[in-house]
Image (cartoon, rainbow, N blue to C red):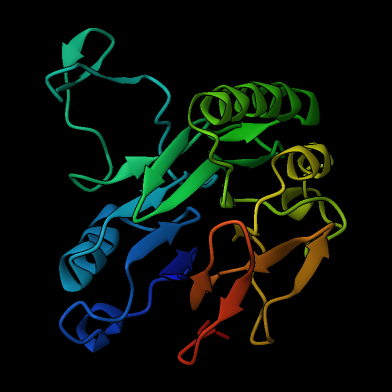
Length: 234
């Protein structure tokens, strides 16, 4: 059975939360970065659905936050409130389970300036190796594969651009080949009023979700677009 997913990235759509009727549109929200925390919190409240996210290059640095077994967060050893909605799950460099799907994530984009969540190709390849190892350990433990790979930037050559800030990562191709998810969802590349590009990496659907798209993900199988998306600003 498929899981209905509201996938969002990069662009705030005023009224989106208000237009969702009584939380019956999606089972899960997946956020691919560069969206305000209060907007994501409003979507969570409107849909009464869990949210899994990764950071974009315009988001704050999330790497220093640590969560205790009691659920409290610290930053540099001191109690701190993280800059994401209460109850949301970060998948950056992690594998998480939500609403019946297994999601692996890598935030950020190719380094083009000073700022958080930007990586060289070598740095992101190192992070991708750690993520593959994490996914392998999880699969050995419970025999479940990754259903969705959540990224901010696309793979190189599939829906990216030629300018440095919007080039994709080459290392994502090896990551997709090993994890073989049904879908790779990303943002970062704004379509400029045209339909966001999509493509395939092996059997994995690569989908730009800038703005928002309503999708159905069938674990171990495929990605289907549902009526109501895509929506993006010109």
